[in-house]
Image (cartoon, rainbow, N blue to C red; front, top):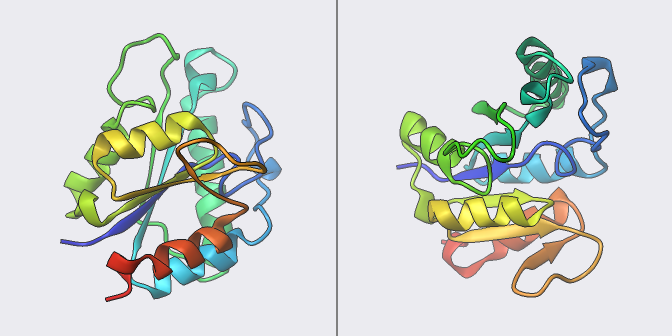
Length: 174
């Protein structure tokens, strides 16, 4: 079975612009490409798992969310990065679905679909719900991209620093 890095989208790979509906607004974060290249070179599949409650709130359509996801994937592809799949939850926070982070549904679905060993995989995001989803899914590591320390979390500045940490993690160096 393969290993993967599950990635939140907004605030992790792209600039979080709040309910982004226009693909032209997609802007990659500094050092995101650098980090994703390292993960890819180390043999990780890359899957994006993103809550998009703007669909459920009626702020934008599912087609808009998919267009933003497609633009993100296309920009990464221009830099030689292959995203295995993008999964998104369109539901409202109180919907009680199994896919909205912190529930692990998107990670479990992606793992089942692509033959991914969650115990050898990593979740990286910028909120506590991302970390909780990774832990609930059984990921070995969960990393939080944040500007300051968060109790109980491995905190990194960006995806390049995340790659340095994960690839250097003892269980991953073999």
